[in-house]
Length: 486
Image (cartoon, rainbow, N blue to C red; front, top):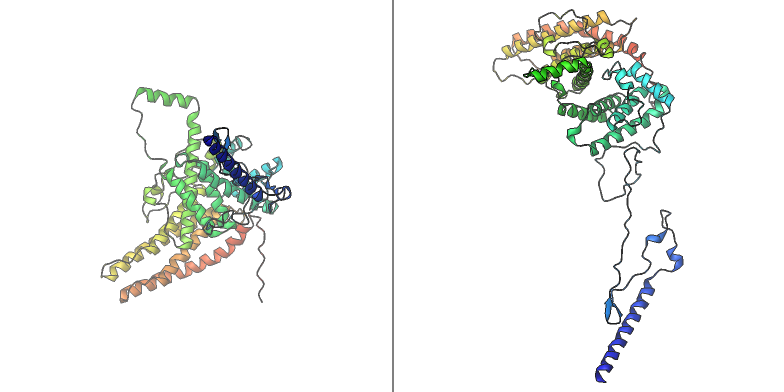
């Protein structure tokens, strides 16, 4: 009897404890009206805790059952698929993180819908106006995949970059061009976050190069320099600066038979187009590197001593896919005093040559002073380099005047001539700004150089005044409103 009394007393205590926990749970449970109240985002509070279960074990018979652990539902940020364009946040979803170093994003409401008519117009606009400055694609090869719905992400980025650059050359697509620009940047960043480094493609490097040209000319110059740096690094990682490194000949009869079989199947021609595409992509980035470095006074990215890539082929060969051999840059610029060959070079090749001379002028300006005590020898060496570079520029300007005229304007040759004139002015500026010594002989040489370049610089300024308006007529660029002066 005594044991049964103890058991009944224990059961009574457990029942009281269970009733107390139930009362506490009801006290913290929300009312039905509170449970249905919407939060500030407009979503229902169904995910809030409805009943707070007690941690007291529930006894059923002689077995104790612990309540199910309380589950929490955290708010999830959905991941946007690659094909969609991510909307920019007005405020950061994580206020504690500093996003001041992130690149500025263009806010877009929805992805731009490209109609078939817009597709054809933007393609035609690129090859009519932008292609002269960026001839890195074969039109036939591009059109073979441009309208495919299942094209690769790299080709999609390249196509969007082409359209972005093309839209800047027509007032019809100015609004669409801004949205295309934002989409292209986001697609390229998404591609870099997904693809490992060993899967870098030529289309990815081309897309960054074209986007850099758009930013340098139409958007933000400093952002364009950053995009150009991305393109330069991708091109360097792909080793496009040594496309034509001599390869060992086939050593076995099987390899010779394989090459002969490929030639019969027409794959050698296709390979040449791919190789020429790589060459042109490298040389376009090379010219951007030289011209921007000359303007900003920066050190150049590509080392000319490491280049083992042939110069671009004539445009007719690239368009038709007919293979041809071209020279190396070192063969074109080997000795300063030697006359240039009389070959009819393509406009692209002319630009590469002038860009190389501009790079040499920049190196001439950035060369540190000699540590020798004899300033006369240092001045003589400086004057020798200075006169050699001036002779190179004079030869190229003479050649450009023969092929470029205001009546039959070639935009790329006109732009190249402008770069050559800027290099002439830079040489003149070097004479005035760089001290060459205090000896009488050094001063005499400096005055001689000053006299030689003074008239040439004045002629360059006069020619620039004629070429800039003529070049502007080639493009339909919207007028920039002049600031109002108070």
